[in-house]
Length: 175
Image (cartoon, rainbow, N blue to C red):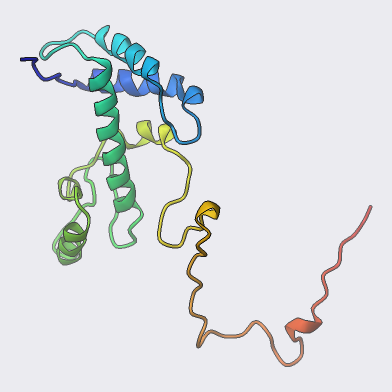
C-alpha cells in the first residue's frame, strides 16, 4: 500500500514554477505530455519534505488537475459582481451578502471553502491557464452555434431624426 503524497506550499510552488517553465511545450490548451510530469516529479522531489511519500508523475499531474479545478472555481467567484474578492479573505461574505452567497454556493460546486478564505495560488496558476473565453455567450466557430443576441426591445435607437444611420458616412484619410 502506498502512502499518500503530502503537498507542502514549497512543493506546490515548485510544481507551478516548473510547469510555467514548460508552458511553451504544452500548446494552447495547456496539455502537458507525460515526460513533463516525470520531470516535474523530479523537480518537486528535490524540495526537502517533512512528511508523505515521494511525488510521482501521476501525483504531479493529479495535483495540477486539482489546482486547475480550484483556479476555475475562484475565477468564477472573482467574476461575480455581487462579491468582492480578497486573496486572504475570499469572497468576504458578511450578513449583507450571506443570502446571495448561499444561493451562489448551491449552484456552484466547490465554492464553499472560499466564503471567507482566499486562495494564495490564483495569481501563480493564472499564467498556466488557457486564454480561451468561457461562458454561455461565447461563440465557438467549430460548433457552428451562434451566441445569443441580446434583446434590444425598449432600448433607445442610435438614430435621431436629423442624422439617420443610413446617412452616416465613414471616411478614411490616405497619406
